[in-house]
Structures are given as structure tokens and as C-alpha cells.
Image 1 (cartoon, protein in one colour):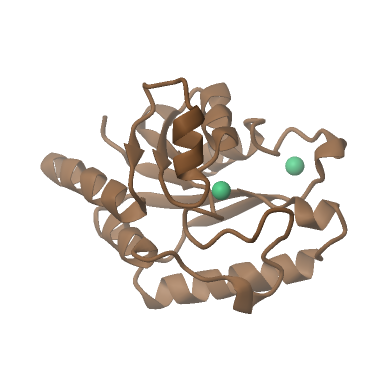
Image 2 (cartoon, protein in one colour; image 1 turned 180 degrees about the vertical axis):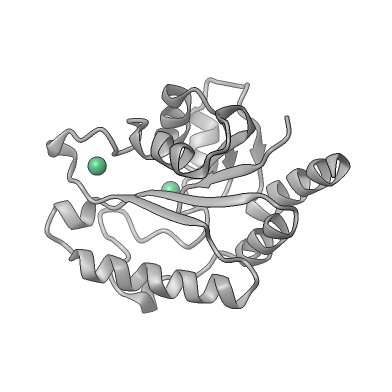
Length: 186
Ligand SMILES: [Mg+2]
Ligand SMILES: [Zn+2]
């Protein structure tokens, strides 16, 4: 498989997850996982499009505002850009679970939106997540998925029944594998 587009979960994949039941509400609370920026920069240099697709139900639950979420994402983009790792698209679901929206993962809406916006076919796209919901959203969207063992990833791997989903220790290990393959084709 050649990968031209990654759709990345945010918390637990790019940055340290907030404690259970809480949210990253302030830019200062957004802390990159080790190797994540290096991974994004490597992927960019390999010509891979980078989208983020993240559930942020803290907004719908009234725990944080859309403006706070925008500020967190502005910091994320600023730091990514400074590392040569600018993100092409950041998509989020702000809804609470009770709203039953079509975009909250495991629903596939964010994934299909990221694909539509990219102009890259689903067959060249890979969803990366640490949670079963990410993998399920990919499955419902008809897109391949990979698991990282950061965030909730190790627990997800233990509970995972689908051995067809490859797992990597972190985003950097995955990026190296993808950049290697992509390089062969260019
Ligand atoms: Mg996550
Ligand atoms: Zn939603």
C-alpha cells in the first residue's frame, strides 16, 4: 500500500491525552508526544498529506468553548509549522455523544470529510489512532487503519480482535515505515 494521506487522531497520537473525563482546554495543556513532530516532518518531506480528525466533545458538554478549541489548535499548528510539520487540515467533532451526530468517531463522518477535502482516494489513505473508536471509524469509512501504542494504544491493542490492523510503538515508528515505502515509489 502506498500512503499519500494520513488521517491522524489527535489526543494520544500527537499529544499527551488529558486525564480520563477531562479535556485539553488551554494551549498550555497541549504537549506533544516524544517524536511526534519529527514524525510529521518526516511524513511531509515524503509528500504525505496530513489531516487531523479529533473528537472534542468537551465543547458539546459545555466544558470548553469553540474559541478555546481554536486556540489549542492554533498553538498546535504554530508549533507544527515551526518544525516543518504543518498540518494540511484539522477536522474536529465538537458534539456531545447524546447529540448522535454523524461525525463523532466511531461514526465515519470526520474520516470521509477529510478524504473529500484531500482529493486523494481512500485506497491511498490511512487512519492512525490509539482508540478502538478510531479504528472503527476507519472501518466504517472503508479506509485502512493503523494503531499506535501511545495514549490508549496499548490497552486498545490488548482488547483488539482485528489482527489485520498493524500496530506501531509510536507515530515516529509508523512514519519511518511509511516514508520508507513512499520513497521507493518516487
Ligand atoms: Mg486518541
Ligand atoms: Zn460530531
